[in-house]
Length: 243
Image (cartoon, rainbow, N blue to C red; front, side, top):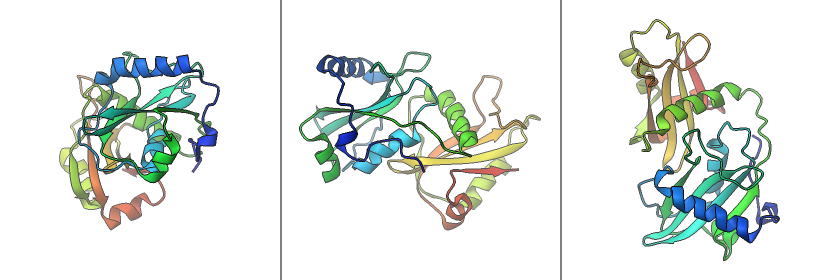
C-alpha cells in the first residue's frame, strides 16, 4: 500500500504562513456545523487512526494536495478536525460548498499524537500521489456511494459483529425489482469504531443503481468486528463482488 501521509513531523509543510493557518482555522470554524461529526466522545485517539483517515477518505478530487489536522480545546477534552487542502492552502469542498473531512471529540491523544502536535494547534502536510493499481474500481464506487449519502450527515448504525452469511442474505432478501441490477458489491474501509461496511447493487458497467428519487439501493453500517469467513473473503482487498 502506498503511504499518503507523513510518518513524522519533518514531512510537515514548513512553507505555510501564519496568515494561511488563521484562514484555514477560520474557515473550519465557519463550516464546522456542516462537517461530518462522530457523535460519540472517544476515550483516546491515536496517531495511526488520524492518519489512516486521510488514506481511506481522501476524496476523488484532483485539487486535493494536502491534509490538515486542527486541534481545539473542548469541554469534554479536545476537538480534532481533519480536512483537505489544495495547493494554495484552500479547503477543498464538495459542489454544495461543504468541506470534505470530519471532526470528533476525544478525551485524550496517544503519545505519538501528542509528540506530533507538540504545542501546536494545527498541522499541514503534503499528500503523495495516489497510485494504487487495481484499486480504481472500488475507490470509484466508494466515492459514488459516499457522496450520494453524505447529505444525510449522520453515521450509520454500529453493530458488534457482521458475518459473511448476513451480507449474502442481505443481497438475496432485499434485492430491488430493478432489471438494471446485475451484481452486488461489499466494500469496507477503516472506521474509528471498527469497519465501515457498504453494500450496494451495481449494473453491468459497475455503476451504482439508484431508485427513482436518486438514492442508491443498499446500506451502510459500522461493525466492530467481521467474522472469520468475511475476513478471509476480503483477504488483502477492500471489495467483494457478488454475482
